[in-house]
Image (tube, rainbow, N blue to C red; front, side, top):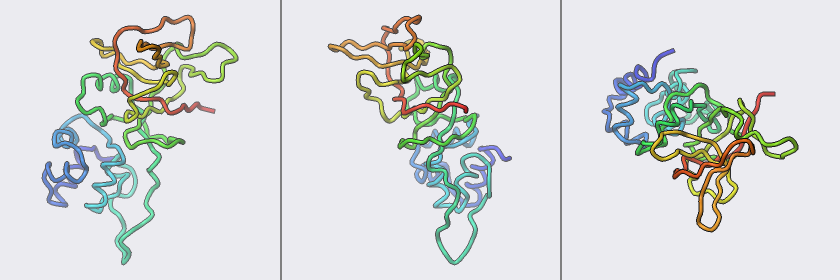
Length: 218
């Protein structure tokens, strides 16, 4: 499998495109493309990959992950079914999520452990995280619980939660990322665990995204 750096270099060489042209087509910053071309990033989100595919003829999944057929088939038609990647989101690490605490553009999650189907409506920026610890494991009998190891889908374009939403947040000044219940009462905001053995978080924080749902291995 080729690296993202090799794939971007091939696209730029074959299509005779500059970093700026790639950025314009993919609707990202030039610095993001430079990271694709020269940095440690290994995979792309499907949204920019699909835009590049439309202009260059390279397959969306190949651009994003290096998997599948490299080029779209040539035929008299100018469209093809292609792989269904619309619902796939990257499963990323908590370390990578923590890097978003200081990021100007938090919509490029970068390296993905794998790509997963998200069963609910979501933005192209949605990503997945594997739950750590037991702070969101609710007491026995509760309808909604998030045991360690389950996977949550997080939409960073939904950053204005309402009281009771499940969120992923960054604790200010610490680059610590946490998954909790967002609480807002009479203007007071805090993060509440579902497990009563854990303390609420009352330090200043900002929201990285709202949790859309979870997935567990059967």
